[in-house]
Image (cartoon, rainbow, N blue to C red; front, side):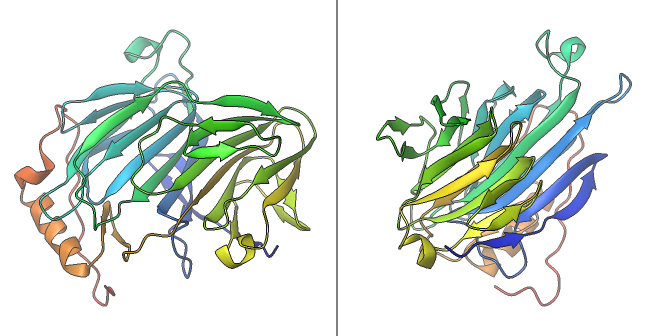
Length: 312
């Protein structure tokens, strides 16, 4: 199988290191997964407030938050207020079409600021966006998943964060996570040096983010904060892929069927045409009711204009 290794675009948001793997110049989404950040790992001093992301909007997407360490408080314009902790998933759905949208805030919490007694003074999380199929009428929503299918396979602990999966030994697992297109997410945590084989769906595209350590597969090596990219033409002739890593290596595997619609991204918006992106910018900056209000005193982040030459 041919594997391409993608390097991240490194940034710092509020003092927190960010490795961005999607979007990645010249490369399309992986199935419906159109955005992929690894935030952290980072430790906060006693006088630091951690991640503080003010009020901002989304359209035509789901935010998918996979928490590896730390705790974050989510508030949104539907009135939801939810803490996400280690090994939990939050999914927020913005809805589809020019009349839909949602806004929210995210902020770190610690034992003295609303977190659990053992909340870490640090942060490590994988933040993903899922582009919604715009030929479906999808409503806004929010779901929290504190428990997900977990099992041991060879040298690794596996957590199915979304989708359905049948292991190489024939065991079937299904995550409760809400979906509007066929996709999968698997956290792979090596508890010992060794190998694990992942089954692949022939109609899916796949990517593999290295969160910690490094992994070897098919003669290629992927380092921390790099992304292995597998293409559907390769997967069609392969039912599985073998991964080798040392104890402590942790991976996030994502896959899915490509969407039928175009996926355009700008700032916090997704659309299938340039005109909807432009209208979302106008609506958010003018306080349109489609995005609602978040019960928060955090700052309201303005949407930047589309750059000249943006291709729709």
